[in-house]
Length: 254
Image (tube, rainbow, N blue to C red; front, side, top):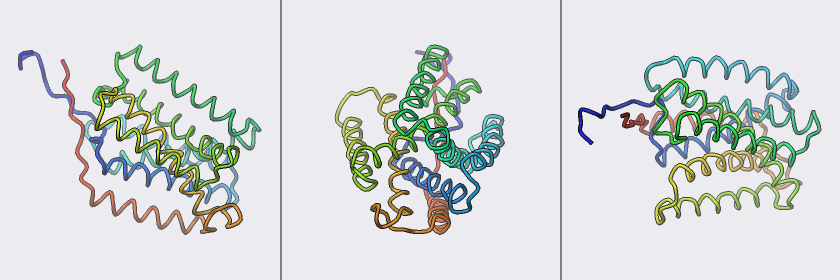
């Protein structure tokens, strides 16, 4: 391939590094406790919480799609808002509408798979290195939104319906993520599959970790107030965002 036929395309998503996964887990944990703080601690309810975070998400993701460059703070604001909106939306569907954790998890899992399938059929790849167009970005954020919502429902289902509890569920998900990391470093397993598998699973990991913090002692939690947990995790995330290098993804476009 000659250099004249290849040019560098800049993606508005960050390089997938250990720092990326650290921030992702913090964002998912923050989304769970933050969503619970608004809907339950403040008593606004799931529908109002979804409306609030959904509106903020639309504004943020519109800015993210329209910008021409990678802005780390904007990117992670959008990620965090998908976890906040995903938390309140999943709780509204599972609890208020009565679909239940398993039904909600199954429906959202199918939505994630469908979005990835349509994305692949439309653009030929779902690899994050291919996110160099507005259309790819829309697919990317749609997939993320469904996966973040799935994570809340899946985390609740694992903790409440399988007998594992929040701590047991977190340990199981963490073990699966370690296995995925092993496959990444020591096998030829498809990297795109591993990325999306890890991305989806870090959401219920954050959800179960969050529930381990704010649930009552009788349910295996630490009974930490949601507002306090939100403030502390938010502060830690801001510090990490300032300290962890954020390199934008570069991709080769033919």
